[in-house]
Length: 245
Image: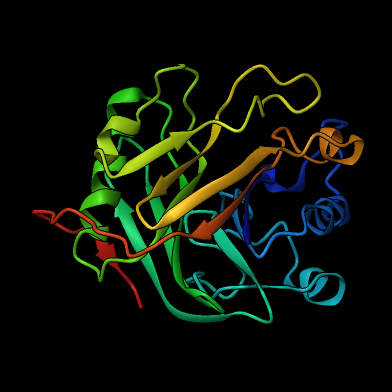
């Protein structure tokens, strides 16, 4: 069983308007996930310094952030990073440029497990539906140029609709909404979602709605427990938005 999670940490600014990254770390530990996609880990202005200190993660969790940042003060890329349990080996990471009215990107990590590799993509999609569809299509295109591998795409999809934008990923992905995740104190919108590709079996999923999570950020984390169920097949794509290492 592999436990995945996604968490928009809102630059560590809680619902009480206090910026306390220690509360985010408390929630991360309670999630007990093997791989966590994080959104809004950096401030947006200037050199985009991180709001979630790497030392805090190193000293108080069993997770390590992957090197997506391009600047010395940032933790993420477009405000996103992926944390991986230290016992796991990461074989590749990529930064994926996404189209849109405002700068957006996705991040990808390929992780080796005892039962085979898994690919995790973290995404923070745009506010406008037309661009969300374009961004999901760009992610699918980029993945179509990589070796087929069981893949999960998770993050803040910024989608209030029940139907969602999952059709842009194609029939090989199944979109799941673990539950309402925004706003954290009284969640009404299922903005945070996970798309499961071929080769993965979803056993369970949900939102992490503890008292600390309801105040630490404006989003609740989501989680999913998956197992590798067989080889994955990814439809070929015409173009790639892939950049980075």
